[in-house]
Image 1 (tube, one colour):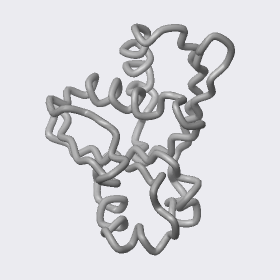
Image 2 (cartoon, rainbow, N blue to C red):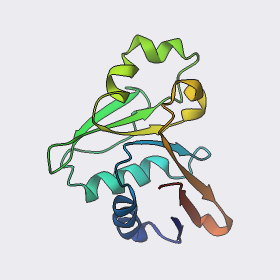
Image 3 (spheres, rainbow, N blue to C red):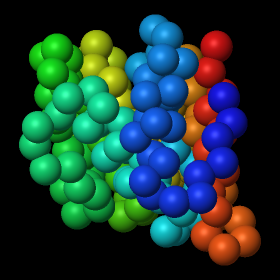
Image 4 (cartoon, rainbow, N blue to C red):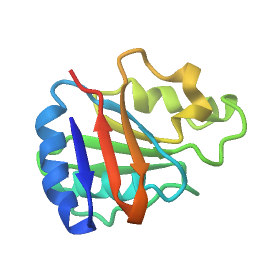
Length: 139
């Protein structure tokens, strides 16, 4: 799935399309430069899944937990502040990743070797005039 996003108002429709493409996948590595819109994309997806809590960046907490309307847990990670992979183990990364929850991982490059093989990548690229291209490598 590849989507071109000209304005933030398009994100709910893109999020709905992404949800239809998720299939049985549950671990998603978001890849893009600082300010590309990774957190904004996760927020749009969570809202479409019926999350009622405030959805924000887990930069300082490293992981935020949300509940979808159907009760399924969603974990949103931000590894930007991780300096070595051992820090991920210190807060129990494996318990989150190997649960049945949906996991969105920002800055996966910093823990690349810890990502389960079955993870799927979401690339967000910023082009001219702030236009974003979102590419999901799904099934």
